Length: 613
Image (cartoon, rainbow, N blue to C red):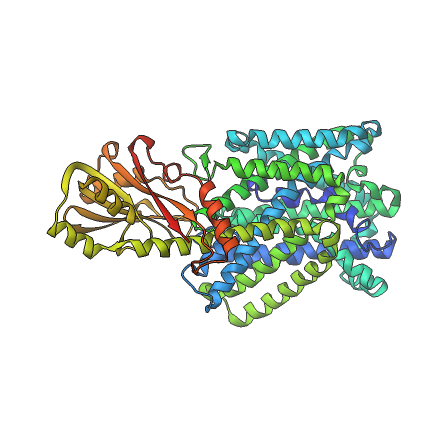
């Protein structure tokens, strides 16, 4: 439960730094008087109760894919990978993938706004240091991304205890504020939220865009389900995080009732003067931890997309050999760093960044609700309860989304642009791979024809084992092998057609890893099964053959791979030319199969093929 505090609740746990302040300083802000203060506070309290406590903790966490959560897990539960555009599952899959793309926008904004809002506490503690806020924020972000290659495992053990201290400080500061104005407790009555809407109309509705900032960690909470399980997450929320957040928001509102001028930084003004510098330091550490959790989540999301064939292969580094969840993707890391630093320098303050924050996350929450309703039958949920709960949550989510759409001209376009660009890459890669497989299948021959050829006109067989990596069409022999035989007129004594299959579940046990069929003529058909959260290691998997009577000396194996050079053609029916060009560019820059499958480079033979699209 303590460990979950350091990963699951970092994002939502740092929202008190800026959420209430933005509710009275953002787009369409309501007046800072007692009735409206209680109204906004009531919206905050009930948002935490309905969206996080009820929607995510009670309902959505039940929609797990063999213990794993997150929007990719929801998409996998639909099992849509072979669906066509005529199927409902296909369009739900595209919707889910777009929701996953939205998380990339969040992955760049969260570190920027979190660290910047913490460092801005220097303006309260020591106004003379105001000029150092931006340089210090940039330096912290650069350092944070620079240490990613070492992995978070070594310092991860400190995250939970530090965040436990953070939530205790939130609670104590909140209690200090509540003592100033106990009447703030009246905000638990939803009447004040209704009254605020009645008095302010459209302005009150637009305030929802800022109120939404208090629940922006909901998606991260769901995505980290597989790391800790349902029970620790629920206990951590209801016993520690939820009370601490409620107390702190109450305390900030109580302070504003007595000192409206504290709206510039109500969180830091809650602390006594002697505690300001330590509080700034603690807040900075907490936001660094929150940023680390978001960065690690982005790495995991990218690897899952690669495993499922939605993105080209990238270099994935295991920072801990015995922990598959500890990964580092250099390309993603440096792109995130450039985006975060650029956001800080462009927007200049957490106030301005808040105008860009929320659009992507609110849209992603709508997608999560729709997908959860679509897979509800698989979990045997009561149909009537599913419809009522889903409609209620969808109404809340769309209300937040509508209020956040006002932010689009002020910076909200950024997250949508990032999501759209990544979705375009995913769509082009998936479509291009399908077309490439179709072109390669036209060159391939069937297994039966290949075996007949070996019987009628046997080639010279050399000692050893050749492992030929193939696609998902088990009945075809890849063109790379036939091309190799045509050039060399030889074949190894044993040939293994190897297909790596990513299942629609996060983990596949080692006992289910290997699927073997003997085809005769020294030819073996072998399939390796992995979950979408597992790294692929072909040599290690091949050693499992000893347990089923097929011993393989992996140190003497030759791995035969095809390396296709994709050539776009305008005069050949296929994809639009611009999409073929984009796919060709992605294919040229994709990571090598040798590294992705963990193959020993000195044992790999690559056969080059030119393929026109």
